Length: 129
Ligand code: ZN
Image (cartoon, rainbow, N blue to C red):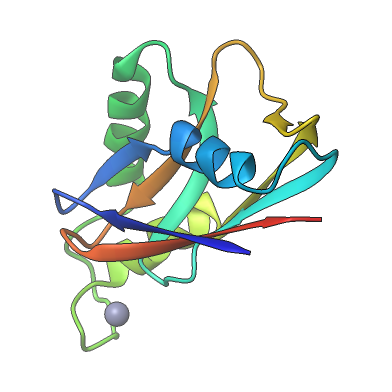
């Protein structure tokens, strides 16, 4: 398993980590298998979506903000319940096929780390099986 360390810059943002994940795979040599990208955090997630047009990620974050109100009768005392809810909506892991050491992604696809309670220093686990 490889661990990527990522410094996020904003309270909420989607960061394209496709190249960082591929670099982690490059260190493993040309293998076939499955790559699991796992985020060991409760207020961040990981998703796969378009990385060609950056307005797509803006729109995803806009809709998440509409779906999950910042003010609500949340019970969690830490005050970051919207971040927990958004993290669960995105999920903590993604799996991508690997062929000869390369991520098998669609032309327009990228892997995005989703920060919902930043800025923070985050970890991303990359495992090939
Ligand atoms: Zn919390």
